[in-house]
Image 1 (tube, helix red, strand yellow):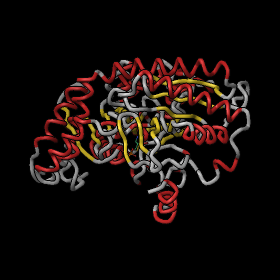
Image 2 (cartoon, protein in one colour; image 1 turned 180 degrees about the horizontal axis):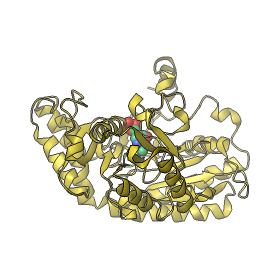
Image 3 (cartoon, protein in one colour; image 1 turned 135 degrees about the horizontal axis):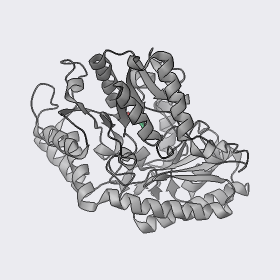
Image 4 (cartoon, protein in one colour; image 1 turned 135 degrees about the vertical axis):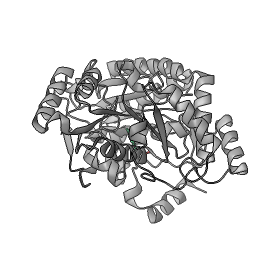
Length: 435
Ligand SMILES: Cc1ncc(COP(=O)(O)O)c(C=O)c1O
């Protein structure tokens, strides 16, 4: 099997609507932080498949848990029978997510279905029509989750009739907590705060540009929600499960959301998602958000293995440590590489915003695309996010080693140097549409 034959077959079979391609990356295997490509190269994966491979690839504990569950096969779901792996997983999540009163857990397959189920339940339980949503936010790719997102790639989707979009503060582009909270106050006043069922927020906006909101913003939002009986839904799909140095990213701001959604890394690469929320919301109706195979023993066992490995290996602490190392290395690169406008993030959720000019902050989208392609040639994979596709997103496996972090920094610096020197041709990015 060659990379070119795989790429040709892919072009003939998998439709564009299912693709988000930035480079000719193929994967026929994986081990630790590396993907093995169809032509036998080992590529350091600084994306971890958009954060899903939280334990890296072929983790032995995860592999064993999945194999045992598949060979014992206790049914195919928990829809109409009780299954222990799903129960244990739900109990473990409840123990890790702070909250008051009785809370319950819904299980699904992806971050999208978790956000969709959570929003529908909140609407029914609250009886309120409106939702506060942030421009640039990405909450999923199903109709219901797109309807409550604000990402530019989803402008074609039918918006939820009660979606009220407000700006997310981007400190690099002059955003402040005070100004963003003022816009929220204005939106609440315009529609009436009592009409809002929930505010949906990514504690770090990922697909919208890996933006860390300024201190006090999330706390201010939480305060307003509490004052008006609006539920705060925190979308931890990309940044949760230890990635930012704490189990949930919202912990850094000392807030306690009412509803929390998880996906991606919680399943270690297998399809698993979860909503944790107050019992009155989660029990709003029977057979209301059912997915036949949700909570199946294989995926629930993968989730349990992820949580067990996170504890055993201290992955949240490691993410904080390796993240600081990665950010420091990239900031050092920024001293030489003019294209780097900003290095930001927390733990192992980092963004490198590329700009053509550090004063005008003109987004360097083409340069970002070329950096991704060149870095892959040099053995490191990652993708980009942001409204202009100009922010390199680094969300590697939480198990990444210090030596691998150094290797990533070196290659990113070398790739940027090649792009700055005009050594990457336009033809190299032809065919990679990105977002
Ligand atoms: C913050 C956030 N929420 C939800 C989703 C949707 O997750 P999935 O694609 O696994 O359904 C994503 C995916 O990028 C995400 O980044």
